[in-house]
Amino acid sequence: MESFTLTRRDMAHLLLAMEGRSDLQPLAVLQDAWRRTHSHLARSGSTMPTFLYTEVTPVLDKIIKGKHSAAFSLQEIVSLGQLVEYSHVSLASMQNWVKRDFKEFLGAPKIGKKYSVNQAAILLIVEDLKSCLDFESIRQLFHILFQQPEDDTDDLIQPVDLYAAYSTLFEELDANGDQLLDVTGAGYVKDNGNSATGQKRQEAATEELLVQAADQYTCRLEHLTPNQCEAVRNTLLVAAVSVQNSYFLSMARRYVNATLFLDFQG
Image 1: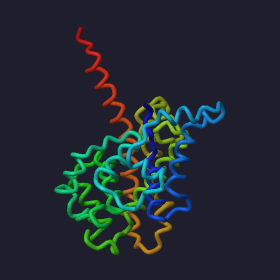
Image 2 (image 1 turned 120 degrees about the vertical axis):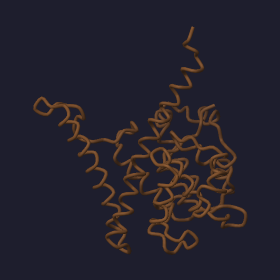
Image 3 (image 1 turned 30 degrees about the vertical axis):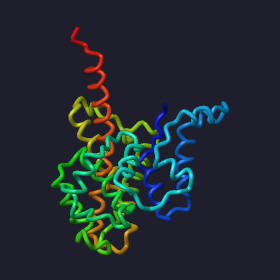
Image 4 (image 1 turned 135 degrees about the horizontal axis):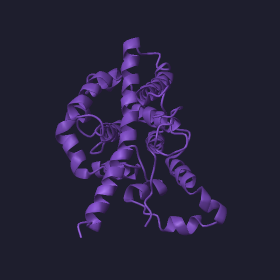
């Protein structure tokens, strides 16, 4: 069966919709995401047969039937995370994050025995950042952004807004959807016969593009000081690069699995 897959921006929009902070209903977010990736089927009239063979997980089933709420069990957060493209979420990992590695930022479930949208977003952010950073570095970033973990009012930016911001930033810089940041210029073109100079210019162009895009978001955060804006901007840049890295890690895993499964030793 085909898997139902969402981009990170789709997931961010879904979380915001489930919290009532979007013009769209959660089901509409899913419908838009599915139609966008199956637009070729609409022209041929074969959307129905295709969706019939699309795997609908229990958490998706709830959303489709309108039985959703802005509260999630840990298993539901894992199921949502597994919908995100090039993500490798596991229940065991998230259990460790909740109980040990990021316990101070997550705390106990905030809605009865279930986790809030922001708590779910923190787990999804960790999943992305760990492709580039160690856990201690992630915790240090979280301390800067979320300050006193037990007090949500002092956050520089809410976790779900951070997730939405860097997801949007990445997709806007990947306009053609090939999972590679679109930067003008050829990375290894020689500059007056010097390929190293050309590469440095490409690296500088990539960094400048990311900084400018992140600045466009943080300049709207008028309640923050310049230093706080810079902290948020830098985190957006790191997170966008982490999303890029997730794609390459996923590719590497696929090739390793193919090599081991097909057994090329013979």
